[in-house]
Each structure stands twice: as structure tokens, then as C-alpha cells.
Image 1 (spheres, rainbow, N blue to C red):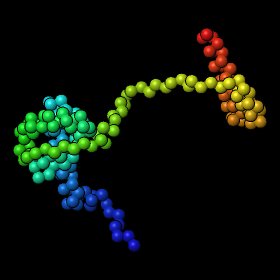
Image 2 (cartoon, rainbow, N blue to C red):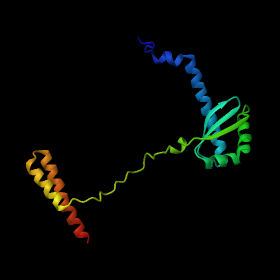
Image 3 (cartoon, rainbow, N blue to C red):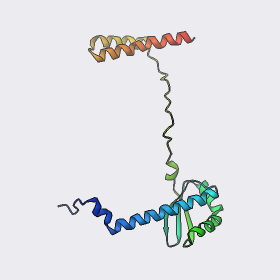
Image 4 (tube, one colour):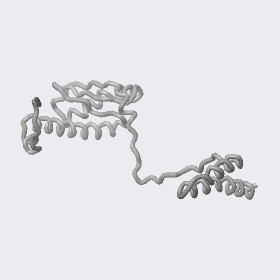
Length: 161
């Protein structure tokens, strides 16, 4: 027997636990915006909020290098953050290498294809042509074109030299 039955999304969205979770996520998102603006002033990157609990802000830093730089400027960052977050008492930072693995991909960057350096030898072209003799239809056409690549590429390299 199934314990949980499907329920409509409107019921889930109106659930008090969901509302608390959404409010918490919104609060952490707002804190992260404030943190990123302060960290930008201090030229620190690769740092993200992990949690905020009982006056302590927990941060995740991508590497030991950024953690060291953060620790050097910790007191300045704490005083700047206290102006926006009066309930802030302390900051704890730990290394999370997963942050460094996330790579942003540029959407509009053109994709460049490299020419295939592999060559078909004349012997291989002969074998492919003999296989094409016993094939039929589209397969025969494709095998013949593949074998023709050997002579085309050889002719193009001869012209270049």
C-alpha cells in the first residue's frame, strides 16, 4: 500500500512548511546579494553563503587561496556586513571545492571544429570499395564516398606541397 498519494501543487504551495522553506530561501538569497556586494568591495571572489544561523554566517569558499584572502580581511568584511545585517555576530568560512568545479559556459560563443587529421590510406580505400561492391542502396553510396576521401585528401596535400 502506498502511504503518500499524489496531491495538487496548489495544496503543496499553501503548506506551511513550504512557505517557511520559501521564506528561508528568500532570506538567504537577500543575504547573499549583500555579501557579494561587500566581497566585491574587498576584491574577494568564489565565496557563497552556506547558511545563517544564530547570528553566525557560514560561508563556502572554493579554495584555500580565497579562504586565506578572506581571513586576512575578515574583520573589515564583518564590520561592513554588520551595517546591513545587525544580527550578525561572527563569520565562519570553510573550503568547498565543488564551487570551483562549476564553470560558466558562454552561450553566444561560436563553436570551432578542428579538421580531422586522420587520413585514409589507399589500401584502406581499396578495402572499403570492395565492401561497397557487395553493399546496396545508401550504404553503398556512403562507402564509395568514404573511399573517395582518400584520393581527395591525397590530391589536396599534393597540391599544398
